[in-house]
Length: 191
Ligand SMILES: [Fe+2]
Image (cartoon, rainbow, N blue to C red; front, side, top):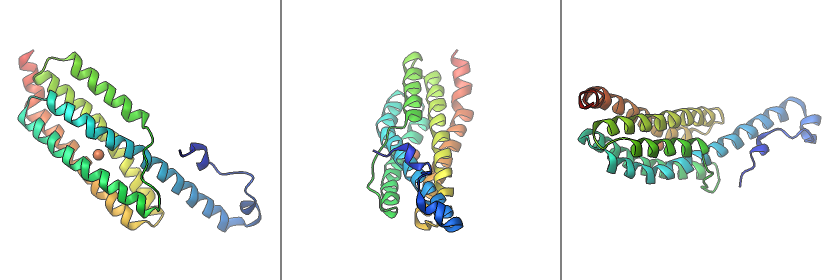
């Protein structure tokens, strides 16, 4: 298991004391790389957890558009897991998951929303709310991973991360469209 403290610069590192500027920037690159890999493990856990969570959302959703959007995003998520495995191998790392407490919390929240609402438009609105929180978390993570990969000169990894980031943004925009076009209005009428 990755030690989060490992990303911190070791003050006892003799190289950084004796070798001035060049080794300092090496330390920064290594620190950024370690942080990148740590975040990669975090989002790898999150995506794999979503492969189990999205089908539950689909089962609970009523609106055809919402079911279609979630089903489409489930397929995208499978592809995103494969892309992450490729990014791990580009960084010469074994694909490994590290529990993402933030995503675990968002998923708990999604379950609580589904349990506390009646199946129909209100629950659909709640599922969109939960799914958009997930998307925003993913957008933040992939946006950061993308900029780290670019900084580290890992262009192939950056291309893969950009693809996933675009899918997450697309999923988020689509959920907003569904909410605005159907669900929120109908949830009001049903109340
Ligand atoms: Fe994703």
